[in-house]
Image (cartoon, rainbow, N blue to C red):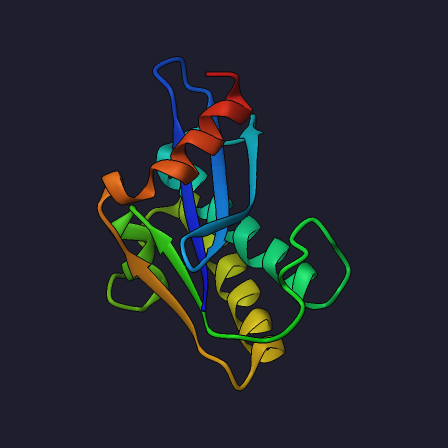
Amino acid sequence: MLSVFVDGGGDKLGNCYYGIAWSRDNKLLFRYGAELPECKTNNEAEYEAIIAAFSITRLHLQGLATAIDALDGREEITFYMDSELIVKQMLGEYQVRAINLAERYEDARQYLAALRELNAPHKIWLKHIPREQNEIADKTGREALGK
């Protein structure tokens, strides 16, 4: 099973970032982080992070990217986030009420649907985890920000 740890956030100066880490059997395969100059809130950064995680994973499964050499076939994938709000919105347990998140939510749902279609019949899961269990993704994002 492939595990993908995803985190978005910001610093006290209003700089936003995200970090993503792919692993299998507790072995780190690849990390990617980016600064997000267009984001204003942590929740926006969290959505940008999950959209990027879905998109990058899909590209690798399609063979269109090669940074994660170990993604050579279809398998069960679990995306882990420490944002309970984003996970529960994506699972349909919470409504998206914030206007600044609505478009990102719809984009994320479309990316997830496309990834699920490509990865069928294997399952794709989204799970909330405590922040302490998501340190690799947070560290990756902060490094992208230069922190």
